[in-house]
Every structure is written in structure tokens, then in C-alpha cells.
Amino acid sequence: MSKAFTRETDGEDDDLALPHLPAGSKNYITPLGYATLRNELFELIDNERPRIVDIVHWAASNGDRSENGDYLYGKKRLREIDRRIRFLTKRLEIAEVTDPSAHHGRDQVFFGCTVTYVDEANVERTVTIMGIDEADSLKGQVTWVSPIARALLKAREGDVVKLVTPVGVQEVEVVEVRYPAPAVEKT
Image (cartoon, rainbow, N blue to C red):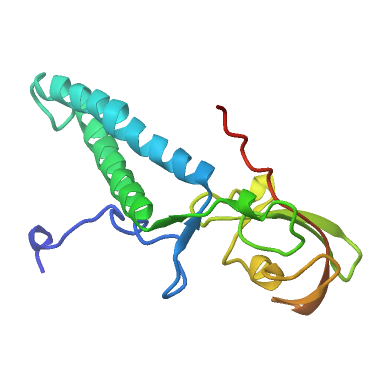
């Protein structure tokens, strides 16, 4: 088949569906995570995209586009920005904002809590259960669909739960459960 009739995608829609949500579940996110994604979306729409459009317009007006680096890079960057805008828009539309501070003072594990647990090797770890679009493993955050979060959800301080790992089933003990304090409203 001639290449003229094939579509090159640059992986354009590959990341729109990632990360995946379990079938029939909601896209839980904290208020801070929602605000962060929303701010990124508006930054792209209001500032980044118009700036790149101006650069592409200027580069196109210079003539030959085939060897114009500003034009070629600008068009590529516009595709990346548009792809990210579509992704953020879709994720924000299905987001279910859940405030973890509503559980402040409880000892049961729910979305948004910080859990300290001890594994069979007596290694203590602390993780915060976050939304899929906001979790950062470098900050000790895990998604609510991760194996450790699924094992810990609904457990209480002192409970021993089973965690399925590639090595086998491990038992972990919940040592501490913490939630952020509710925001104090100013009057």
C-alpha cells in the first residue's frame, strides 16, 4: 500500500486513555489534585498554546517551511499541547472530587489517607493513597487502584491484611492512619 494512504499518528491518541481506570469505577481525585490539573489546563489554553501559535505564524511567514526549524518544532509542540489539552479535559470531566479531610480523626483506611504499615520483613513504609492522575511515587503516593492501596482500603489500625505481590502473598500490618485536617473557613 502506498504511504500516501496510511496515517501516521506520532502516538497521538496513545496517552489519552492512560492511566486506565477499572471498569465501572470513578476517577477519584483530591481537591488539590483537581485544582492542579485544572490550572495546568488553563495555563496551556491561555498562555502556552497562543505563544506557540504566534511562533508558528511568524515562522510560516518567513517562507520555505520544509527546512524551517521554528515552524517544524512549533507544529510538533502544538500537537503535543492539543493532545494534553484533550487528555486533561477528558480526565476533569470524569473526575470525582473527594475530600479526604472528611475522614479526619478516623482509624480506617479510605481514599486520601496516609498509611504507615509494616511488612513481614519488619520494614515500615508510609504511603498516601491518591487519585490516578495525581499520585507521585517519588513522594510516597500510590494510586487507589494499586495493589498496596487495594489491600489497605477499609482496614483499620492494627489490622493485618494480605498483599498479593509477584513474589507471593505477604501480610502487612496497618500501624497508623492519618487524614489531613479540615480546612478552617474564614469568616
